[in-house]
Length: 210
Image 1: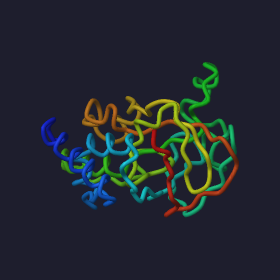
Image 2: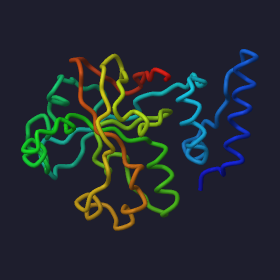
Image 3: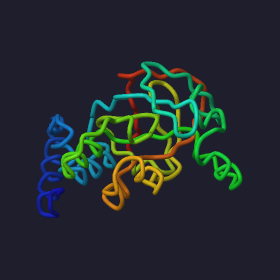
Image 4: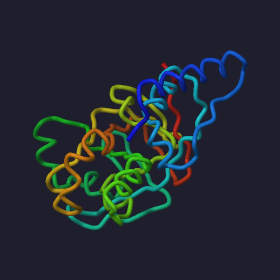
């Protein structure tokens, strides 16, 4: 459960005071603790108060629809196409034909917060790996939902958030029926790739404040 409205106001006021005196905002380091104050983090990020260390925790690709997600240390990204070697780059993803028929370009790359995965697994008592959620990039230290319609940089590669990457019946069948509705609004971000480049695990994620 996230913090209440009153606690949110208190923490934001503390951040206001910290900024006015030139001090930084100290946040919990663990994913579980960060998840509890997710609304506060989102507000402070939007106001440009936080200088957080947002990073790429994991990178995954699958060569074909239904194939296991394989962890990789580095990845080659191609603007307008996706991660080289991934099923959607090859137009072989489960929803490739459907998305292309709609003229959508939000299939290029997907991201999900490690904090949201950790919290879901803790809440439901499940033992699943990050790759089981079938997203390309697992992040730490950044809220993804506010990035819809905004540009951000992942390890030097610019991307633009398109829409939430909501859980689907296919993923729920693979993992657990608890996935829906528990992970609705928490299951990541679909993005388009703006420029070519390489990314690596541990790379920085840069988000410009409003």
